[in-house]
Structures are given as C-alpha cells and as structure tokens.
Amino acid sequence: MLKIEGLHAGYGGFEVLRDVSIEVGAGETVAVLGPNGAGKSTLLKVIAGLLKPSSGAIHFENRRIDGKAPYEIVEMGISLVPEGGRLFPELTVYSNLMMGSFNKRTRRYFKDSLEEVASLFPIIKQRKNQVAGLMSGGERQMVAIARALMSRPKLLMLDEPSSGLAPKIVASIFEFVKEIKDRGYSVLMVEQTVKKAVNVADHIYLLESGRVEFHGKKEDFLENPKIKRSYLGI
Amino acid sequence: MLILNSVVNGVLFGGVLALMAFGMNLMFGVVQIVHLAYGQFIMVGLYLVYVLAILYHVPLLLSCAAATAAVALLSILAYYLVVKPLLKAPPINQLLALAGVWMVLENACLALFGATYKGVQVVLPVLHVGELYIAASNLIGFVVGLITLAMLYLFLNKTYTGVAIRAIAQDPEITGIMGVNPRTVYLVTFAVGGALAGITAACFVPVYSVHPHFGGAFTLLAFIIVILGGMGNLLGGFIGAFIIGVVTSVSSTLLNPEIGQIIVLLICLLIIIIRPQGLLGVRGK
Image 1 (cartoon, rainbow over the protein chains, first blue to last red):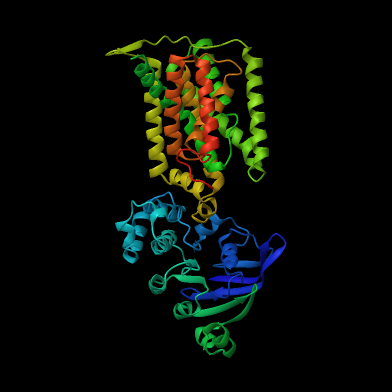
Image 2: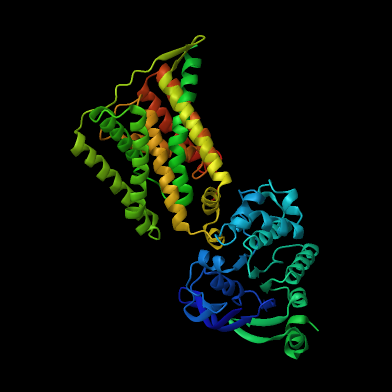
C-alpha cells in the first residue's frame, strides 16, 4: 500500500533521514520506533507532504506521491495525526472535525463520517461546541485522531500519540489505536514508548540516527537480543 | 445631551469602521500581510461610485453594488500580481510592494480625476429621536456594517471555506494536511477583503467627498483599530472600531476634529507601549 524506497530528507544542509525504506501493507499496523531525534517525525512529515525529500521515492497504491502538496496527499487517502494533536485551538470541536472532512473526496460524507467517528469517540458529541484549546491533553489527542479519521483515510499516520500524556491516558489511547486497527484501517505510527506500541503493531521498524537499524515482525523484534537489552530492558 | 448625542453617532459610525477594519484584519490574520493599500481600495470604490452615478447616471444603489464588485476584483488582481509572487519573500518586501500599489492607485486617480474633491451629493436627513440628533448616513452605515459582519460571521463559522480561513490563521501547516490548498484560501480572503473595502466605500458615499489622497488616512485608521484590538483578532477589531468611533465623535464635538485625530493616535501609541498585543490579543502570537 505504502512503499518508501531509499528516502533521504533533512532540513537545510542537515540530513535527518538516510536511505530509509519502509513498507506498509493494506490493513497492517506498522510501528516505527526509535529514540528522540532519530527522524521519526520527519519521516511522517515527508510522507504527508510537509517536507520535500532530497532523494528517494514514495509510492502509495502504486502512485508516486513524493513532492506532492499536502492537500493532494490527503485527497489520496493518507491522514496524519501530528504530535500533540495540533487541533485548531480557537475552533470548536465540531469545526475541527469539519476541517477533517474538508477534502473533496469525503466532504459529502460528513454526517456519516461523524457518526462513525463518534461511535469510537463519544466525547466528540458531548463536547462538540467546546473550543479545542480549552480541552485536556488526552481529550485533544482523541479529537485529533477523530479529525484525521473524518478524512476517511486508507492509511492513518500517528506521530507520537502518547507524547506528553499521563500513563493511564496513554493506555486508553493505545486501546483506541487497536480499535481503529480492528476496523480495518492501515496504521503507521511512530513512537518512543516501545512496549505499548509493540503490542498493537504487526511490523516494527527501528530508526536510529536516521537509518533503519532493524525491521521485521513483532516476534522477531521481541526476540532480538540487542533490542531486548537496549529497548525493552530485559 | 451633547455628549450622549455624539456617543450615539460615534457608535453608529463605529459600525462602518468595524467593517473597514475587519477586511484589513482578515488579510493580516490569514496571509500575514499588512495591507498598506487598503484605504486606496476604498478610495477607488468612491471614485467608481462617482463615475457611475454622476458621469454615467447609473442609479446610486446599483453604482455602489458595481463599485463593490469592482474593488473585490481589483483586490483579486492585486493578489495575483503583487502578493502571490511574494508569499515566500520577507515581510518587508510584501509591505513595500503594497506601498507601491498605494502609490500607483493614488497617482492613477490623480491623473484621471485631478486633485479636486469629487463626490456624489446625497443629502440625507438628520433624524430626531427624542432629544437625539442622528445622522441618517451614520445609521445606514451602521446597519449595512452590522448586516455584512453578521453574514461574515456565518460564512466564517458555517462554510468549509470560511472555517478554513479561520483555521489557516491559527495553524497554516496543519490546515494543509486537512486538504486545504492555502493559495485558494488566500485568494478568497483577498476577494472578501476587497469586497469589504468596496462596501465601506459605499457607506462613505453620503459622508465623504473623495480626492487622490483620501486613502492614506483610512489605511492608518484601519491599522490603528487592528492594533487596538490585537492583530488578527477579529472580535478585538470589532470592539476597537466602536472605541475609535466614539472617541473620534466625542472629541470632535467637545474640542475639534483635529484634536480627535491626535487623541486616536495617542491611544494607538499607548496601546503599543502598554499592551502591544492589543485588547484581546495574546502575547507572543
């Protein structure tokens, strides 16, 4: 579904991603793990069209998407939940969700999408007239995921969904990710919280200093002695 | 009673000022550009009404409507020719380019119409309400201003394009990944901003005669109102407009219009010194 080959990208002269190749199959959940500064967020930014890669290719459903504008990429069915949610702080929850269904492909399904998303996050109906900037971090993250789902994506990308949240809320966010996965979405998420992310993922990529240091099935990841030591603390 | 009277007229005039400032504020909030030629757009609107109504004997209301549409088109033209090529340039370049538009429009009007005052002589009654004297021209401006702003409120809250305009002012990057093409939003914003300059001009028809240097004072006034309310803060600009309306009106009645201008500028200075983010603005935004 999503195929990234030999991707290089960075800011100015500073290279953040070096020869990264990643694949996400239909219906799969892929987790890209790695320490702070490994280039995880940059990877999602490049896929979403917010940053142009310096070389390499990204194909989505056999169409080349690298170099396209962000609004064209949403139209093709890729949606990003940015780190911290990045809701529009002065807009109500409802208006934020409206922005989620802005693209031409899904705008006419607004009501259906809203019902579907509300079945996952009942909070969006209870709070629909609340200004997003006044919500708690966990609530904002939920609304941000809901907003991304409003665009009826084929691939949902999550940038550090657990970032800045209390452990109890992190657990519930990952429950939602599992639920989204069970509803048939393909998911690509980047995370620092290794254990939680590994639980929901089918495939794992490990990114260190902009390079893919490991990729494989969840089981192989958990059995790898080096990873066990450095990331799982076993 | 004299003071109450001028307060009432100031509030009424504030309705038009709110409309005028809204256009500049919207363009600042969305495109991050200070529209230095905004008053000149109002000037062009007034000249157009003069040309249509006086020289071609078109009915006045129709002239106003046509002038509004024409100023909106002019604004779109300015977007394509001046703003769009400079979207990624440093702000100072955009500012200078719009100052260029100001010069071009002023001198074009000077060449076409000469330096004398041109106006449509509309004589509107002064209404007596109880002991108050209310200028009908102010009342018309107030009503038109509020109706237009109410329509804008609905547009900005209920339509996809309107919500996208507000969203892009808050977080342009994320607006892109919602599927919004920012250039389309900028274009719509300039069209709306131009239309507001046009409607403001229509409201000014019974109040002012126009001359080639008419615009500068209104660019400045709109800018002062925007600063007063907080740059890009639409509600703040709305409140600021009424404050300026009342201050101008009361000080003109009690002292004289020149002192009124000075007081308005003093308020602007004080705000910049004491509360640079404006009445409703957020610091560091």
